[in-house]
Every structure is written in structure tokens, then in C-alpha cells.
Image: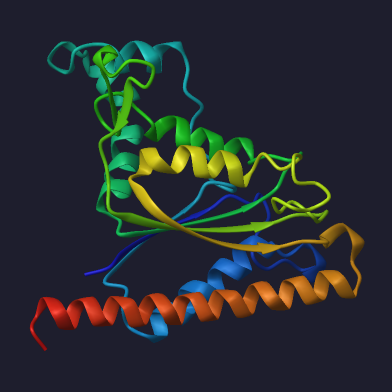
Length: 232
């Protein structure tokens, strides 16, 4: 069984009256997921558009509720954590996670960071033990695969690119992904949007192609796993 959790972070809709305003990251993710669906390997699909419907930012009351013993939480504190509980349950249920995000000011949108802040929570997605020395935090979830789909106005954010040290989007996603239980990451990126030239179109075409290829590869992998599991 494959449960897919799809997170879109762009504040733009996938389709707009002016096509030049269409979200690139959302449309690449859409191509990836549609290709998977054609292979009939998605048993459950969970979708959240945090760009257009952002989760609440955490605040002092949220932190107070998190650090109150569960059996002593007030009704109000339980209500404060209700969204966090639901978002964590969605991550826990997922086998495959897709995060599609534009690069805003060289990092992730605030709405996506708010989603992570609701999920990365002590005794839910990580525990803390000073006996581990300098690395007291340990993830509690495991066994998940993450597909990161990004779009950016500039280019050269790869490790050997001309802006290698300016991207805080993918490195941040990679750092936080361990608290989602991620053990394998695939990346698809579209660049050059602000240049609006042939380089952008070439990068966009490549990203759509990569989305189809990766989806077909994962579908084949999933089908093979099912056959092995059922002795087919």
C-alpha cells in the first residue's frame, strides 16, 4: 500500500487567468502525481496546499501546551494542538511525501516553515535525551521517501553552481526531513524563471520530464514490492 502526502507551498494557484502567473512548482508536482496515478500505485492521497491555506504559526500558548504533560492538558490546550496532531498523523501515515515549493528570498515560504513547526514536536516526531551527548534529538519516524520539487527565479544553486551558497531552501528541507522519517530524497528543480528565456523553458521541460521518469521508476518499484509481498 502506498500512501502519498502531497504538500504544495506556493502562494500562487496552479492555474490563473494570466498563465504567466501559474505556479511552476505546483504544476511539476501535478505532473509527477498524475503519472503515479496512471500507474495505479497510490492507495491513499493526502493533499495540503499550505501556500494558499497556511497552518497557524506556533506561539507561546502552543509551546506551553506541547510541554505540558499530556494527561494534564486543558481542553483549550488540546484544541491548540489539534491541528498539529492531525498534521503529524498525516506524515506518520505516508510512505511517500512530495513537497513542492518555490524559493522565496533564497529560502522556503513562511507558510511551509509554519507546517514544519507544527510537525517537528517533542515526543511526537522526535525525542530528547542528554545521554546522547552532543546530539540529544532523535527522530521517531522512519522508512519514508521524499520528493522535493522546487522552482527558482535565478539559477546555479547546485553544489558546484555560481550560487551554491545562496540557497537555503533545499538544504533546510533536507535538514528537517529527518524529523519526517525520511530516509531517501529525490530532487527536481526548475530554474531561470525571472530570466524568461530559452534557458527557463529548457529547465522547465527538463523538470517535467524528470517528474515523469521518477514517477514511473517509483511506480515500478512499488509494484515490485507488492508482488514480492504477496508472493506473485
